[in-house]
Image 1 (cartoon, rainbow, N blue to C red):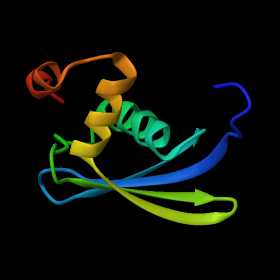
Image 2 (image 1 turned 90 degrees about the vertical axis):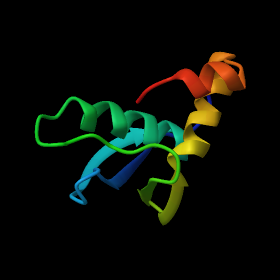
Image 3 (image 1 turned 90 degrees about the horizontal axis):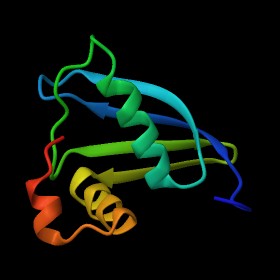
Image 4 (image 1 turned 30 degrees about the horizontal axis):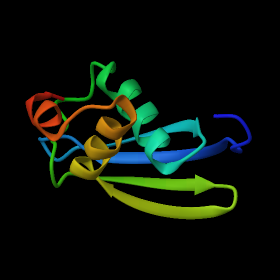
Length: 95
């Protein structure tokens, strides 16, 4: 996005086995930070499956220090809007 300042963020989420994983990413919004972090974590062999729905992702913006909590279901709804997907399309997606 043009004009949106990129910020360093520390993003944490627990996998289905209860192990919490944290990664640092640069993003222009909370949801972009979640997307970037999930992409990194899903590509890491140490991370098991991350839940959907009510799984919470913590986003801590480093400068200024702000922390946000996002439910995966809300992130998926945002992602669907960005991609122009319908509610039915989003329901059929698997993460």
